[in-house]
Amino acid sequence: MERAPLQFVAGVLAALSFGCVIAFLSITELSCLLSISLFIFSISIPLGVFTFLTPTYHKFERPYHWSKLLYWIFAIPSVVLPPIGFSLVFWHFGCLYGVAFSVVALLSYSLFARISSEIQKARGKKPPTHIKDDA
Image (cartoon, rainbow, N blue to C red; front, side):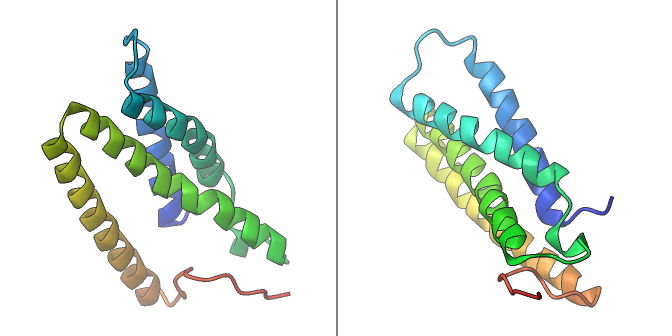
């Protein structure tokens, strides 16, 4: 099954979030920042797995508006929430680490969005930036 770049990112972030949660198991007492990041990971892991495993909506024979909407409701948080959780983990260790991770994560995401958009355009596909009802 062909996957969109967003699906690969969601899958990788879900796996990284799971690894972070496993690392939290050895900590007896979580700080406030680590507790919030654990809560974020508990939401983002299932969303990321769902986004990775679900076929993209344009692969369906007759995509319905609700299926596109449902896909984006799951897909966007699955790639936005894990970096927030990781950022909180770095903020737990220090302000400098939190700022450094946050800045580099934002730059990386903007670069990824630009590159994947250019790849989609080169392939002749319209980048999925909005929901359009085809039915």
